[in-house]
Image (cartoon, rainbow, N blue to C red):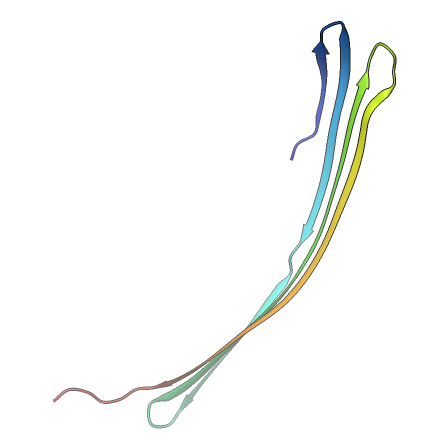
Length: 100
C-alpha cells in the first residue's frame, strides 16, 4: 500500500484525507536435503523445509472537515502475524532391469 494525503471536496465542505500505512515481513527458511545411494540400485531421499513468517501491518486513516477541524473519521488498525511450518518428504527408489 502507498501513503495518501489529499483533499476531498463535497458541496460546501472540504475534507482532509490522510491514509498512512507501514508493513514489515520477515520470512527466514531452511531446506535440508539428504540422499543416500544403497547397493542394488536403491536410493533414499529425504527433504525437510522449515520456515517462519513474522508480519506486522499498521494503517491510520483520518478524515477531517477543514471548516471545523473536527476528526470525522479516525481509524487505526494493527495486524500481527506469526506462522511456523515444517514440511518433510521421504522417497525410496529401486531401479529394476527391464527389457530383453
